[in-house]
Image 1 (cartoon, rainbow, N blue to C red):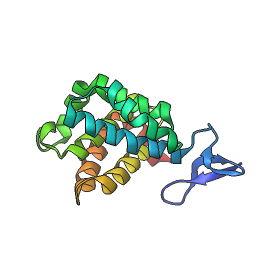
Image 2 (cartoon, rainbow, N blue to C red; image 1 turned 180 degrees about the vertical axis):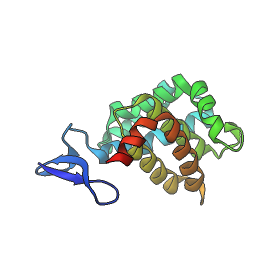
Image 3 (tube, one colour; image 1 turned 60 degrees about the horizontal axis):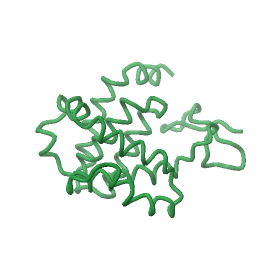
Image 4 (cartoon, one colour; image 1 turned 30 degrees about the horizontal axis):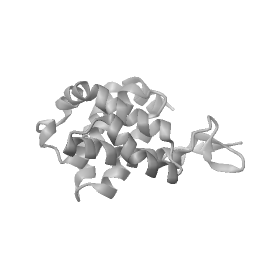
Length: 172
């Protein structure tokens, strides 16, 4: 096992298991999680446009998920979590937005909801990972400068919702 490095190249990032450079010590494969988040973004986006529920969105994307070797359980948690907590997520995001949530571009809105769910309900996932993954997905699927908007919103939200974790990261 070797220690990883954080975003700035400093020691102390996540440890990886020897022979499996992409798998963390806890058995989570970040690449599979990334694919799950991208699929969750597509599913939440589809739910927003069609009004479908999580069960139908999951069924629609689950087949593709399995073929991509993604973390199906995580994908389903994100989609169900956004559906279950949508009103609370939207309300908690509102102080960080410069407009109503429904006025935000649909891709950015879907990603903000997913990231807000993760920041609030998936405390096992570091805030930096959540924000980084959200930005990658929005750069890939969103509007040209959508990632800049999402970054600003999530940075401010994380500073409030994950203040202790952010302080601990600064103190390292």
